Length: 383
Image (cartoon, rainbow, N blue to C red; front, side, top):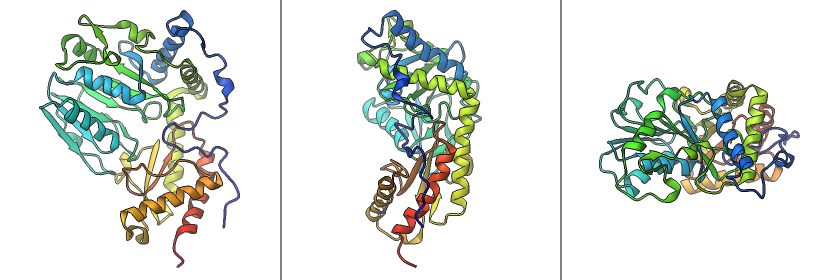
């Protein structure tokens, strides 16, 4: 039967993600508008984002944090183009964005000493293959595959190379071992549901040392320049952004941090995401037509929860027909306002991707489930 109860918030997109509970445009009323971002109040707001992010995430005091252009992509690109080339590079990739960084390093930077370890959607590569005498680049959580590294035990404390971690759908929802990470990036539009276009870049003292002792052989555009005269530009890490940020987006980031602190900080954020995942785990266990894309339970993401359709009649279809089934499934949910933007990523197998980050209420995930069953029943062939 068709369900009668809708999620109060049907937003399950994996980016931009659901706004925090209770959000409204009034949250932006204190934005520093019509002023320079380098004015005293403008810079103070940017510094507030930096320092409150440090506090909530537990980032060490000697790590530098910057607000940069271009969302998480811009932050990762800045790190790759500014830091790589001093030694060999190992690239670990198991989904779309990890493969994007492979393309950057191999096809754009054209580094010669590169090793790539990649796997199909659903599996991690063998992490033991990474050589930490080299630089190692990886995503913490594969947003398009729903596969995350389970912990940081595979990263040695003592290492010669840098660890460069794209953590955009992990920051604020998963524990990150900061002492084992030299570069970390994320974007506001993920776990805290902020507005897009801006990224965060975190550098360890080892990463700063690399910047001050190594100059890439290629030219760097202005947006990527973190040093001047062989020294780190400290102002970038004190709220003096390289380009002009949107102060509306900055205000929204502050609001997200306010909310995070009000519910109990990082432990509460992680607990909310994990509770949402548990609801989906219980549903999947009793649902024969769908499976988690992550093959190993220990690597299953609690934010971008990815599923693949596995009913035999769907698997018997050509790939294009499977994708068409996904489109019809998603369209049914959207027409009812039961769930929005939860189709699998375009490169992934046909299925669903349900965002379960901290801004999503567990009650809304629970309300979504009968609609998923209903949509399948509408499209499945008669028994």
